[in-house]
Length: 118
Image 1: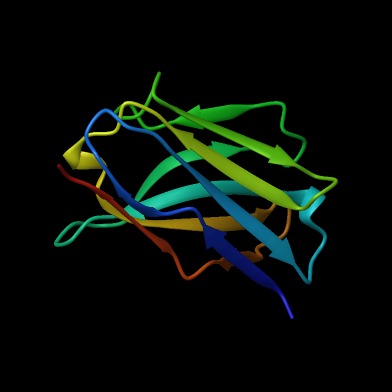
Image 2: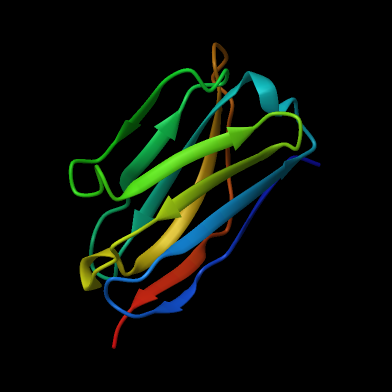
């Protein structure tokens, strides 16, 4: 069964860091572009960061550029999001998503809560 499971969320003080991880199983991870999305209360889900299936290209939302870094390990079927200099506007549920690089197939995790508060 295809599955994406996020981990690493939690409560962090402003200016702090967190590293989210997403473990994939049940599908060929290495042919899926991977992304992190987030959804804050009362707001629409937004793309935070994305990485191509080969890991050779990334893109970021303007709001996180220079603070967040997405990476993947195709040998371990994982994708990570390193988040630095966190602020209250980063508070949200963070979701991992995978999309086949050519086929219309997409998977989503259940999300992990990130709360930035003093």
